[in-house]
Image (cartoon, rainbow, N blue to C red; front, side, top):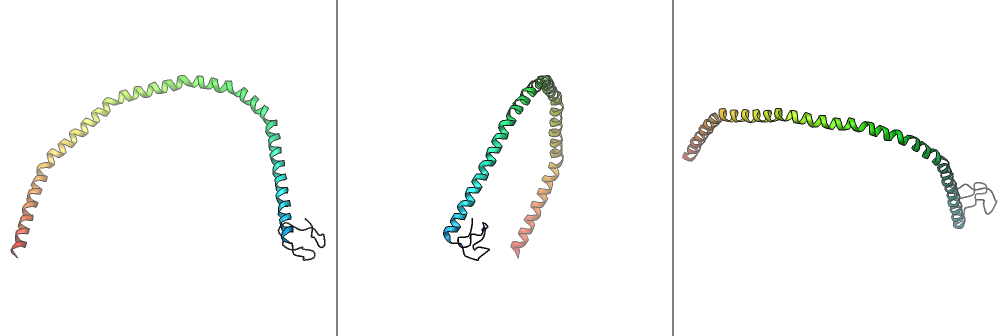
Length: 145
């Protein structure tokens, strides 16, 4: 855009002519904004157009590469299938073999818990009785005062 007074070129971010100092009018600022928007749109359109051309140019190569690789990927999947099936079978077999051990461990834990309860229960009952008796004595003393 050029200044309306001296015709000097004006940059996009100024409010006055750098050459003659004339302030830009609202209309000139609006025109400058439109010119800037138009330039940005043209730039964007040309970029999108270039990307579209590049995509059209590259697409056949990508299609050929996919077509070339697809059989190898398919073969690899077929080759991996028996290994995956064997891994699943081995996992199930391992789980079946471990179940009796897990069951025995659970049973031992239950028995250990029962033994601890059986051993400590009388002592705990005795401690509760002694504590209850002591609490009664303290209550009685407090009431007497």
